[in-house]
Image 1 (cartoon, rainbow, N blue to C red):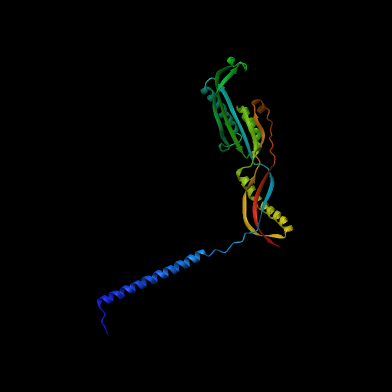
Image 2: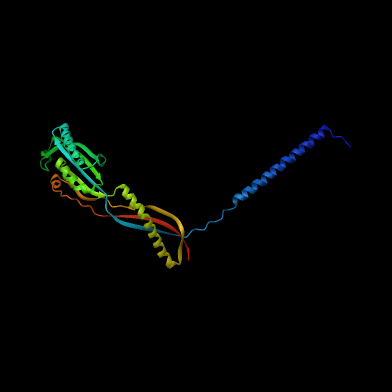
Length: 266
């Protein structure tokens, strides 16, 4: 037997290393090819769903539980300070009188306060060269908003405020409090959904289709009328003629829902 020389051992070791590397590279290429093929396999096709979109509504007539009264005090003087002092005195007296009826601080808020110059404009139009604008003083306007669920006090609030110094009544209206509005909306949802289901069934029957499920429900529709105005921008003379009691009337509240039903053959 021939003995291996050191040179021969080195050559054989190199050949073995090349063989190992080639095998690993081939295996990696095969694995990558398998992965690439696997990625090219398409997902199973999802067939489109047959649906019908229907809007259901529900309406209820409810009695409002909130009265909104906006009134104020306008004063005028030659100086802004005098106009403000007169206004503050009249408004404090008015607010105190309203509170004496059982209206709390939480039910009264200031919605507007303005100070503006007042001019006396004279002269024909035209000629404009004879037109004169003379400064006469300042006007201060302070506006209160009374929002209360004490509906029976509406007329008395008006009479009391005017008697205490208010010389402007902007508006009186009725509406729903947030709590009652939410309660009514929740109670109407089931009726609105049932209406949508009934309408869908009636539409599908002649087509030989039926409801098999629900895809989506949109509950965003809630229609509430604007506060019903009883008085609007009344002058002092008109305010003095306000008669009590002031009556509220029912309001129609509507909730709508949009339902997308899944459908199939009967």
